[in-house]
Length: 339
Image (cartoon, rainbow, N blue to C red; front, top):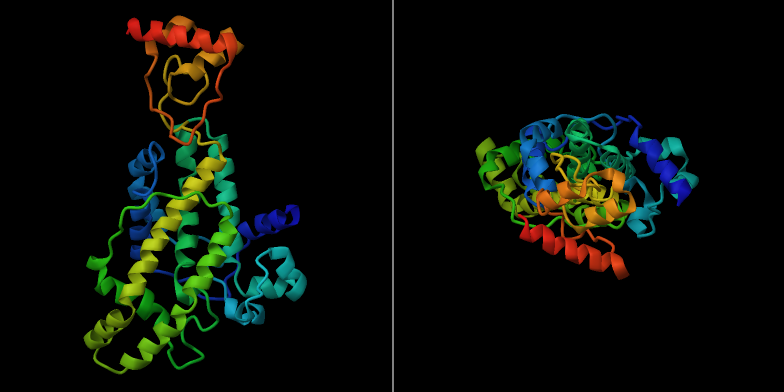
């Protein structure tokens, strides 16, 4: 595990560009990122909504690095035995070869880990605004990994007579049907393993490469409008599904980083009487005061009890026991009576 994390950390800052960097066109990236925000739980969603314009515009820019993996250059992928661990793959093929084939899955996994560290270290809104660029780059990467043409050596149809398909599929075709791109409601899910999440997605999305090339063969040479109408008829359904899943993946990656950071809410305004820094005044703050009365005045806690933003449902406060529980219960009743 330690070796794997070292490999991921190294890849997260690696800049490789043997394949053209163009991905879903900028407008599409921005659209996916903006759509992802609605999948987040509160209060995290509120923070991202306040910065939606900036975040989505940044996600539309090309961050450094390789936003792809030519996974069909590995015979083990086609055989179903591809090793997902970076160090294991390097041991088989050498690091130079692995890097030359694109390292997006490991870069993304490293980004989630790094974003979690930044969220955990953030102490106020300024720190959170500083990490928006990293969140946007992370979004860009996982969005690209939902593009089938970022998973193949034949990314521009150069080996099959489909030259130029990359831009035609991921850009022009989608923009001509952009009014059909919407995102259904979904709840961000926690990713137990961001790396496995990526590779499970690759297994699911890679077969669409053949479908895209087949549609291009079917309609190329026809008038432009007819070509793109035919391409959309043949590939539009799964393309919309890929964009939906990309928006959910972006939200899941942000949410996972937040949970791994301890679900901090330091992006919210400070609240008087909040002795444990979770931006909500409740019984947990009395326990903090009981452990260290120097954190503040108990009268301030009583006066502000219930103020602030309620913690997310997943946040569990350790249950007090014995006399502490009795004391908290009594003080909560007093706090309610005096408000």
